[in-house]
Image (tube, rainbow, N blue to C red):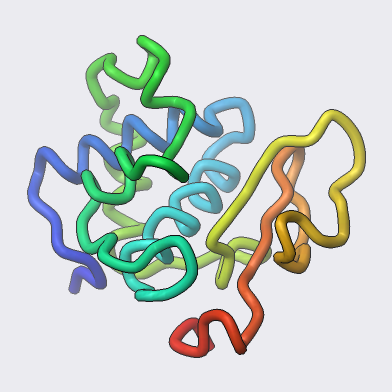
Length: 140
């Protein structure tokens, strides 16, 4: 059962996003990046009020994803990433992205706080940040 609204085109869009943002991190890294996107759709808080669909999340401006500015994002979705996107749509969550609403790839160590958000953890090159309870009680 889906935890966010979708159709086949939106599923392919999520697949393209996770590939473009985290292909070098492998399947687990792509799932974590996808967790962030799904969390943004599911939670009505912080910078993500009125984000209710995959296109809303992918193309949010400001605050969207850099990958949408690169041609690689617009290549056809591959079956392997579509299967990962389907897992995310069904609600699979992986720590440290379980409650994350943000991630970024620093040149060095992950800052313990990024834009007032606490670090939840790191996977390979990406650092994941979750909102505080006060900022997003529906996350918890």
